[in-house]
Amino acid sequence: MNEFGFEDSEYSYSKIPYDDKPIVRDDPGTYARRRKRVSEQAKASGRAGKTLTVIVAILLVVQIVFGGLLIRLFVIANTPKVVSNSNISISTDGSGESWAAATKAKLSAVCVGAKPKTSGEVTYSNFFEMKSSGAGVIIDLDKEGGNVTITTCYHVVSIDTTKIYVLLYGSYTPIKATLVGYSSEYDIAVLKITNNNEVRGSVCMKADIANSAEVCEGDSVIAIGNPLANGFSVTSGIISAPVKNIYVEDNPNEMRVMQLDAAINPGNSGGGLFNRRGELVGIVNAKSMDRLVYSNGSYSIDSKEGTSFAIPSNIAVGLSRNIVRNDGNPIAVTIGLAFNVGTSQDSLDAESGRLVSVVTYVTKTQSAVNAGCKDNDVVINFSYVFGGQTVVVNVTSAYDFDDHKFNIEDGSIVTFSVLQNNIPKTFQLTATAISVS
Image (cartoon, rainbow, N blue to C red):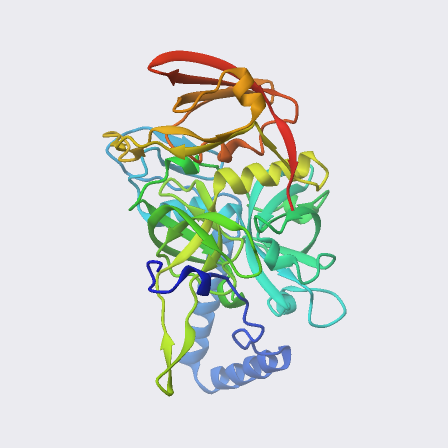
């Protein structure tokens, strides 16, 4: 039985669906009739006319402020240290309010739509009526060149990979995007926009990426998406569990995800999950859905609230950039070892509040044995070269290598430091490419 009271073989989680009948919007004729009616009412009442003038003035000011050039946010904290860019200043320790993190994070958010319901030009008025709608996050940006790279969920765009459109935050002009590549196994897709003036003139910015391995139970998070295809929206919650291995519908492979309790709805798929510093920690992709249960001659609703999931940023962003480097064909690596938490008791890191596990091998290939690996080795760290720099990873979880398998190049050397019978040892293994579906 799993924690929801179902046999594991009987229950799996659902990719966040999209309601193809979103909130009804008035057609242009309706708006024209409404304006005419307001105008006639205004003529009948001088006060109404003055009120309308004030409202219009306020709306113009709001549009200038929020659609304008810069948004500056200063968060009063106990420390003077701040992280700054041209748009945002926010406390480094995350002590600011959720709105501060949201103000920073939303500039990297996009709405995503695939397969227009009708032929013809995609405009702001019909963008939200796509057959599939979701969200995405800008992970790389060249604003001067008008180039953007976006991560989203594959199930958001799989309905039609040739007709994908993106709406930047603060923009009213949908942009046609190109699918660079995807992984159905990990439910990640990468979109690209190139040489676009809408990008050049926008307030969009690249997301700051956090190390998702540092996420803890109880961490505050915000999710930014496009729920019910109704435009940008922010919800907040906490991390319920930093690691869950679940089966998602239409995917025969187990997925490692983070569980959260933020309100997630259709249209949130592909959207970013951010910490209190406005840094990306995950990509929202699934939730536990209500289902109809038949028992003793009657039906009832098996309701599940506050159980949603996100792909860790280390996996989502690492895979996305891997897809770009490999021209749309993702490649992971193996080094002949599989890892597991050892038999020793986990310890608690007093500074971060994270559990620190003793990590050993589950299995090892003959090449790993030849390199010096032995049963019951305790893994201390591993290192590899990426982008011309040496990356050193202290191993505190059985998933630490998994987080880096999309960064390590085929044929490169990975150096492991271990304790072998309490004696420090170092050995090297050669990374070998494996396919990713």
